[in-house]
Image (cartoon, rainbow, N blue to C red; front, side):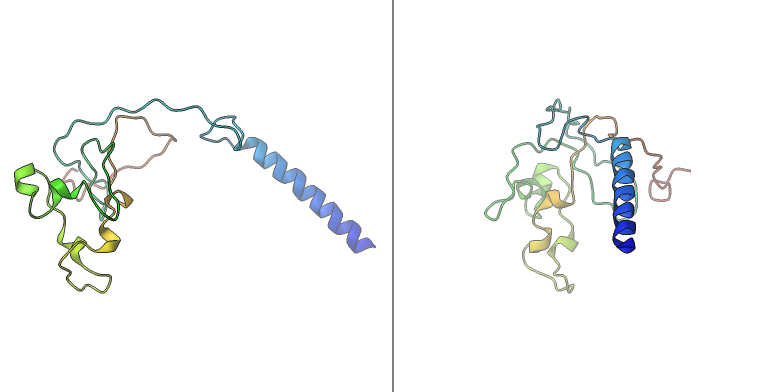
Length: 148
């Protein structure tokens, strides 16, 4: 009986502690419960198509320097390839898709883009002029940008 009482007391104390913790956690959703819709955020302004955006860390996938709203990327078509394919990049004035996108997981060279690299927006994202959602103290490395 003492064990049951002790376990109940511990569970009650843990429950009260968890409630105190959950009351102090803030969410990017604001005060809305998960069941309620959050307010729609205004659309951000995309950068104009331009020069490639500098990378902030080694092995960072290149950022998309233009708007991609309504770009279709599915099993039958990939809008990105209309400009970035090896056949079309010069005419479009776009960056050519990397050779690494034509390799299998085992480093075998393929004739077409690897299935694991076909859905571009898994790694590449467009940039908008927006303030960070949360504070951070990240500073990009200077070795790849040549800055001191």
